[in-house]
Structure formats: C-alpha cells, structure tokens
Length: 139
Image (cartoon, rainbow, N blue to C red; front, side, top):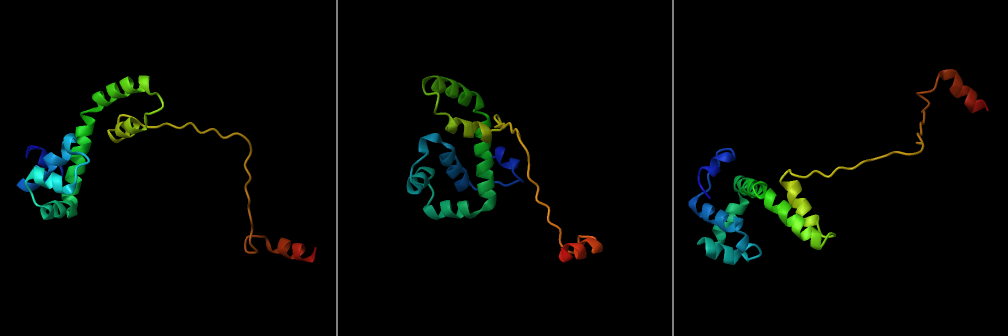
C-alpha cells in the first residue's frame, strides 16, 4: 500500500501502523482470521486495531481501497463466473454482488402493469360545495 494512494480520499494519510493493518486487511490470505492474528501479522497491538476502526476517515479510506481493488479485478470475476457458472449454473449471487459493487452490473427489472386501478377519493365536508352537503344530509 503506497502513500500515493492515500491522497485519494480527502487527503487522509494512514499512520505507519494503519498502513500495515491495511496491507493485512486487504490480503485475501488473511480473510477469516481473528483480529488477534491480523494484529500479530501487522505487528500492531489490538488497541491500535480498534482505534483505527473507530476513525471514520480510516474506515472510509479502507472501504475505498477495497472498492478500488474490486474494480481492478472485474475481469477475473467475470472469468470465474463463466468457469464456475458452466459447472454450477444456479450459484451466482456472490459474483453478482461483487460485480454490482464494482459498478460492472446493474440489475434491471421490467415492470408491467396489466389491468385496472382502484382509486379511492374521499371528500371532507370542507371539499364539498355547500349546497350538496346539505342535500346529502336530507336524503
């Protein structure tokens, strides 16, 4: 993770410890590992991890890095989708979500309206002409 990329989000610059944490968080080899393990690998203590995660600017920066990495992987995701989809055509939601996040897929829905519509209009006494309100009461 280079400091050049840290200027992307409002000038936020992660600390050296946060940079190491980001490298661990962004590495797929470490997905699913415990916070303790991730901190050990990043050579930070757990308090540094929690302090970073409490900072909205750090979280925004991290999320932007994830999205950027995802966008650069769209080609690989499409290839994996094709390969996996031919073997297991019903299992595609995971890749669909990733492609939506990367902006490479937008679900389209076609909505057709067939038939009539019921519109219920109710008038209050204030809405009725004065003569008609009295005629209705006399009926």
